Length: 557
Image 1 (cartoon, rainbow, N blue to C red):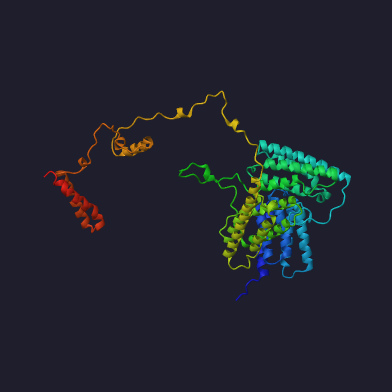
Image 2: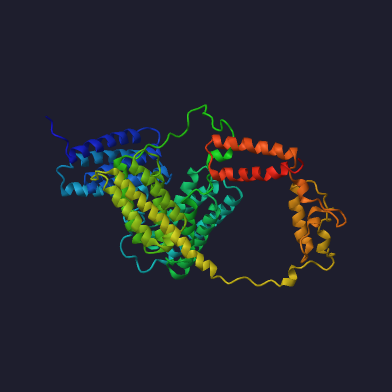
């Protein structure tokens, strides 16, 4: 009987298979598919986390960041990048083989591999990475030449952003102004002192990420021109502060306004409607099968390794957001989180993956509603709870229980969003009312003739002649309106004049032969009721009528 696989053996199999797919993906002539590259990097990181290989997981986080940058077109895929990534895959193979006999030398090797991948992404380690806190104390003063260069280049980037905003306002599909912004930003990217000018590097990262999202979207989100205009104002303020004071203000209102609009515009696609709403009602076949193969294959469902990786990413993001030193830094770290939330929205039959999809949607709605600016502690707490649930999926026996708990976190996140909306409403009520308008200004001009309201009433119809019982209701209503305090009159009700003789009531009763015929009909009704075993209460009116007909029948005899 064979022994079951241990945790290290299972990790070696999972990681080895993932590395084989990565090698096949990155060694081809064509650039790797962005989503597949990111998915495999996330699987590698999740497998390392499940096997408690934290050093390999940290190195895999660098590979995941590179895959995300390549998918977002923030990192060009050339021959040098392909060769370095292929060498990194081989380094991961060596680390996986050393998982059972791990030493300090292997730890140092994994750290070097992670730093190399972070550098390859285009972000210096421990400097401006969205997942790594900023390092060391800043210098006290910048050189005059550096200040002048940053101020000049920042003003030029702001000018390019202003032109891009005006171009997007007139022609939203034009992308060339956005590419001009990226080209203009390259002058500041290699500056060594850039990390000491917070929030300038964070603002540049946010602009670059927003441009990358716009190049992938078929249509820009509503209000994207306002986002670019706010970015131009933020860079203008930073350039002025650097030129005058040597450093930008990290709590500037312009920078906070830019990041707030950035989250609101890209968190949720508000202008997307279901395709079924574009067809006529009652159409028998509104949708048809496409004649060719779809351009994009559907996303693969999330597996356990990817779920663990998502949980780890949520926990790390929650810690970094809680440690943010300014609202600008916090919002930009939340913007980095949007990419992970979008990738978590893949459809799946797994209950935990389905619950994660609902949580991701709730988190996007919360970010779009501005929850982070009003209740960041509640948002961080719920993100950390969701991350802990996903990280514990390996040791859980009941996946439905994790799914229900994750749905509860999503529900509490929705309630937090509703509470922030409720807090905003009293403030709106406290706003001073506008100036009162004189009531005389609401009247008509004196030149216009005023028509008496009585002339608008219709002519009174002529009195109707009595024509049956159905007219008695209208006649009675007219009597009530016209009689005033007078005593009701039967003649007025019937529409007759007082001179006309009234009809005696006894002329309306049965008499003689007619009374006998009516009595015979009542007799048949009583017989029919008796055959149905009717009660005495139902026979009571018929018997009374039969007794009343007897004297009427004898009246003419």
